Length: 77
Image 1 (cartoon, one colour):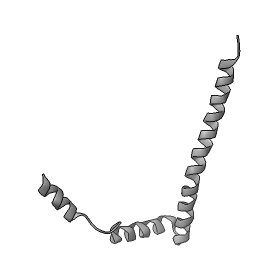
Image 2: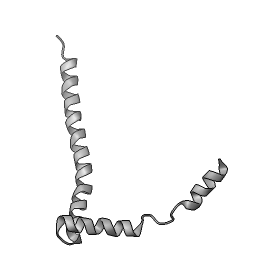
Image 3: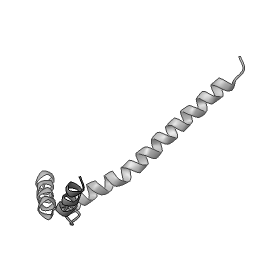
Image 4: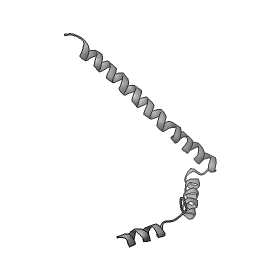
């Protein structure tokens, strides 16, 4: 067991990502979008900003539904 863990640690790549893989992904994205790297930056920026906005919007919608349900439940019959 300890030998397999030790060999796993030695086999681990020190880089954050494979440079050849990152270059291939960049070339493929440039080929798909047919434009320069700024298009990819714009799309990724939009996605990064859209996710927290979407989460906040869903939270506010659920908070409003919860508040409406509590007022209906608290009204006397």
